[in-house]
Length: 133
Image (cartoon, rainbow, N blue to C red):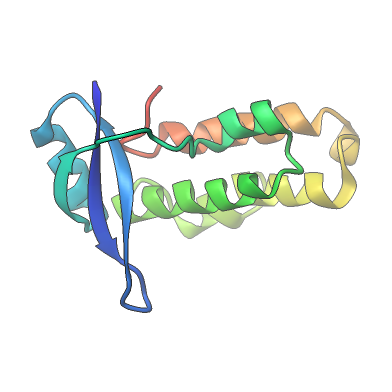
């Protein structure tokens, strides 16, 4: 497995990119095509960690990068057609559970919210083609 990168256009017309974890260039191209992305190539240089579960374990759920990461991973999963809007924002979804934590802290919904939110992040990560693990 290795890292690739592909380009895509943002709604405002500017360009962005996304890393893809895949076994080959052909596999990376298939993932990019599902996302509607283009120009797949080998990644050069370091890869920025974007898995919300890993970031949450390293930094805690209060870190602002967590919300950005779960939104971005949700975007990739949605573009790949592996999740629905309900999967991303309805009750029990990664964003919804993070909202519970940010609103009420660790003891919200009977306690142990950190573990609950990280479990929901991992659920989303498993449904996002092109992520390791």
